[in-house]
Length: 243
Image 1 (cartoon, rainbow, N blue to C red):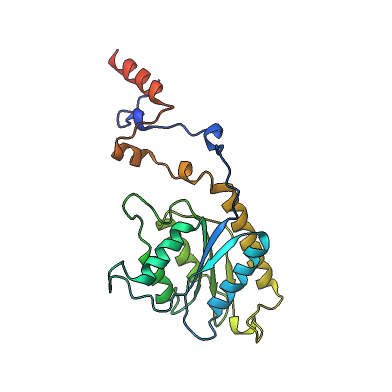
Image 2 (tube, rainbow, N blue to C red; image 1 turned 135 degrees about the vertical axis):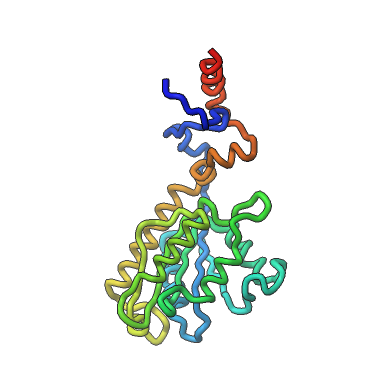
């Protein structure tokens, strides 16, 4: 039998299909928070976000769009600031999120980054983003680029979110919306529908299993939280090691 001298088996849990089966299934509509990264009067990241929210609502989701106006810079004020509290409450309310940023100087905007920076990895024992699904989008003033969505993916991974494979990058965004702010028919629009459909599916798939999916050996070990299902196996391994 292979030995694992660095492993503490009382904190190990063997993944299984049985454990992935949710004991209860949520019946409420998927809750999706949408963030955008520009304060311009005609903000294309906001218009794209609003279009995404309409599509999600068409599928049956409950959506909230956070207005970043009046959100202070990170660390400039106490987290008790009303806009910070609003953002954090929405993040905890959500089961999935959409992040949409303009590409600015080859990266995401400062307004987009400030929103993400105000959502910490943890508040006490609560992780505001861990296990939530995420879709990323960007708008560009010129040719198509993926710099902003790549950065958003990196941030989503850092925030321990389940970032879906598909994404949307809308080039020359000023050509893609009519005077009323609605997105025109195009391959770009079709991709946005694809992304929101995928986000909705992934949210339905993971929201009842998120706690199990993100439960980690290292965190159980740090908390001294032994697993139930594998304690007998741990005892057997300890006995074999002693003999």
